[in-house]
Image 1: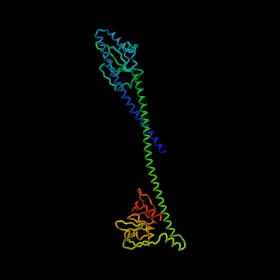
Image 2 (image 1 turned 90 degrees about the vertical axis):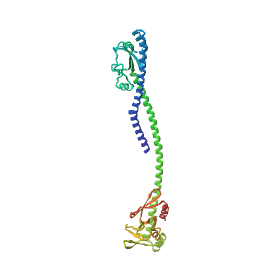
Image 3 (image 1 turned 135 degrees about the horizontal axis):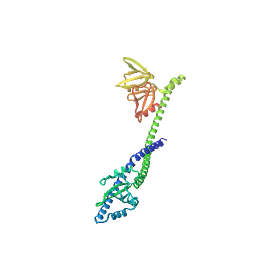
Image 4 (image 1 turned 180 degrees about the horizontal axis):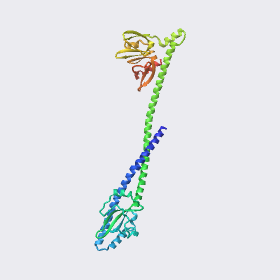
Amino acid sequence: MRNYRIYLYTTISFVLIYVLVISLIVIPLTTKYQNTTKLQNTINLATQEIQQVDFLAAVALANNLKKETVVESIQAAISGSDNGNVYLSVFDWSGMIVAHPDRTKLGSKNEQQSNMLSNIKSVITGEVLYEHLQNVDVETQPAEIIALRPIQQSDLIVVAHLNIKKFNQQTKSFTEQIVTIYLILGLLLLLFLLVIIRVLSTYYEQIIDRKTAKFEDGVLNLSKLNNSLENYQKSISELKTNVAPPQVVEKTITEATKEIPKQRLLTYIRNELMPITIEDIAYIYVENSISYVVRKDGKRYTANDSLDQIYASLDPKLFFRANRQTIVAIYAIDKIIKYGNSALKIEMQPVSEIDIIIGKNKVAIFKKWLDM
């Protein structure tokens, strides 16, 4: 169930981010760049066309050809061309249309009063024209003047018009194509992202499963150790407290504990000699070359013997040499926990003043000791 939530949240986050970035940034920038470039190319081509018309008309007038004849020639050349992106027309200085692809407009005034060019010397760029077209109403202004040039030796002006309606249709078609491409690309990216998440999640799940299995094995082993400890402590206690014939008790204790080398340890508190019975000892440790004996009630005493000498005099069934610094009594072990990868940590009762760690080299011996 957790994996499905990851996929769901990833998909929702990706879609939200991708749609916002695409719709607010990428598509507008892409559309603007494409339209700006296209308009600039259109302006350049329109400028070249009106220059050619201007040149031909100027040559014809220089050869004493009548203006009406030149206008008719231009009219015949541009008739019906207003369905394209750019078309030409001819105005006179008063603004009257003398040549236009739509003959019904001949003799009328120029309807494009809000065009971008205020005079014949004005220069328009694709970027400026694109920004201007964003605020133009196609219904009231279907075309926009993008270039003009006066015909020499006459009162005529050749004008290039941009078909705004046609341009908007092409822009809409381009935008739809861009949206489709980005949607397909987004779908592919989402699938790729989900596959990557699947691969990574599978990899980490395997790692977690291995660690979990290892941890469970460690917990199981610790549980067995603690159970062995509890059973061993219980068996020792039962051997000493069970009511039975003296001969049976003596035989049982003898078999369980054999011969205890010492029943007491001689210790010191200040300058006073203090014997401590073996059953009262919780643990023994060495610190700064001094051996300390800690009783079950938490009181601490010092001993003159080294840890090796003390351990040699103790019953190995009741005491265990945990490490070079510590000897622990079976009665005082409260809990065994895992420590690091292979070591064990013993918690005592009373709580020990130092950490009692059984290294990995002695773990097997400790387990065997508990199972005795």
